[in-house]
Image (tube, rainbow, N blue to C red; front, top):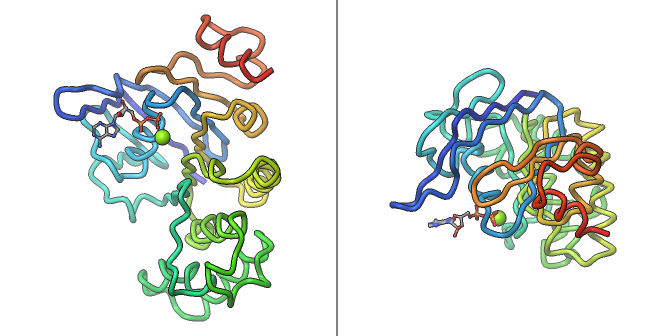
Length: 238
Ligand code: ADP
Ligand code: MG
């Protein structure tokens, strides 16, 4: 677990600024959800926290350490994307073990961590299968498993359920909530789905055009939206 702090974080692509000075304090172990319309900067913010995208201005800290100049693999984070690109020529076990092997983790520990993650995600029966023999939901669990085996302090999810059908989305949402309880990790989760946000979040960050409109618990946003944009966001789920 680690806290995550953003101070005056900005992002420009060429002359175009798309994130305009974001300040945010995320506590250790918190489940924070970023919501907002398409193009408002959710993925960009997440990628800057992950170190996949340089920060134009400001500061990102993870666990009290400024990480602006620390490469992604050393930030203690793991990211799960919506397109769960598994290696097609590797088994589920190998897919989950790959990153650990690259990091020269001892073989017995690789085995132990992969089996533990598979147990938590209930994909033990599929460890020897190839990705093409799995359903979409099972593949997404393998992708989450690849994140878990690395024992990250912070999990970053970018619309992880958007490729799943409604029933599977609801089921996987519940599993992610359980995962948060089990692993006791800090989670930052991007979605444009209000139901996901309202059910998963300790706190929701409502973004609009590269700025934070409001940060609050689901109940706070529901009871006291600060403006019509936030109110509209809450209302649109009913
Ligand atoms: P969201 O994830 O909320 O849909 P993004 O963070 O992907 O939004 O994008 C925020 C804004 O930045 C959008 O206007 C998008 O067009 C722009 N953008 C994202 N990536 C790039 C890029 N590599 N080059 C130029 N503009 C980009
Ligand atoms: Mg996005």
